[in-house]
Length: 120
Picture 1: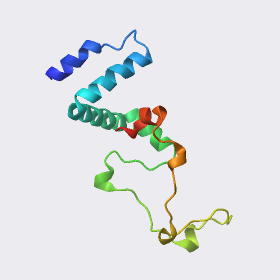
Picture 2: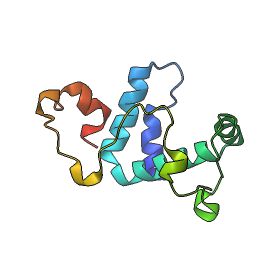
Picture 3: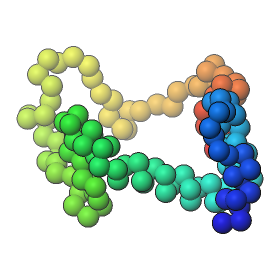
Picture 4: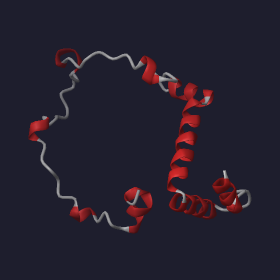
């Protein structure tokens, strides 16, 4: 709790722009990694347990149970005769035929990539 009070020095977020919000959260993540992970997990779980979010997911046509680890999701095994698309577009590569791609030209060390998670 002391750590949370320490980070409240950057809060509240009111009247601060998005860049200031991001800086406060990044500092928190960098200096209190374990606590940040716990807080992040709690926030994500709380979001997906909110009735509004559950209703929105279900309204999109996706089966969604609040606790999928208890009930699981209904689903039949894939059967090519039944489940293969009838339009015959596209293709797949079997796992044994998959080859590694050379990603060096993607320049994944760019700052934009680092900002979006390479360092996590």
